[in-house]
Length: 198
Ligand code: URA
Image (tube, rainbow, N blue to C red; front, top):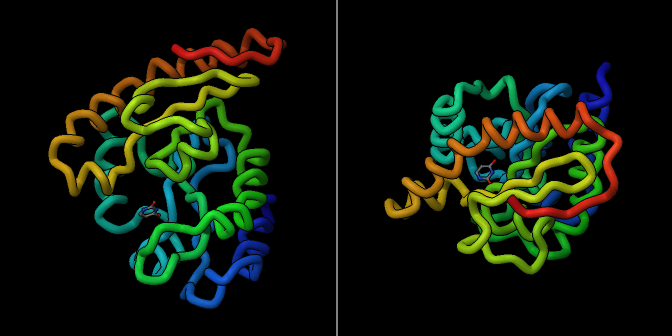
């Protein structure tokens, strides 16, 4: 069994917060252990909770189309969320739930070792760009320890707010060149710890 599958079993049994009481199924994430790019959303919704898979509802279908726009299929990337259990009534995840779930996300990132991490929406942005505002930093990237972190609006926000559609679609189109840059960084390591915005 792969290390990711073993991790999924642990996540399925997780009782670290009250979301465990409400969920139908845990939604650990899916994609290749060798993915170069990881997308991190907020929390499973109703469809995800039913199927145990991330981004399979309308926001997920839109994410699939965004991926196609840069020539990627779902299977080529890794998709997960900040919390792995559906918050009841689709409410926002609570700080304690996010903190309880953080270790799972860290282990996923460790196992996959991606070149690029894309945050989708405010909650995952807050983890990797603390104190920033999505309206200011969407479409911008930071490079830290050989990983490029890139902030985007959540696809559901763009579905509900027509004015964000062009923005999210344009932000998506910047990913291929950032990923190419991330690969160059990986090839030219070792690098000192650094933080730069570009
Ligand atoms: N929204 C998310 O943030 N994650 C999902 O998996 C589905 C919708």
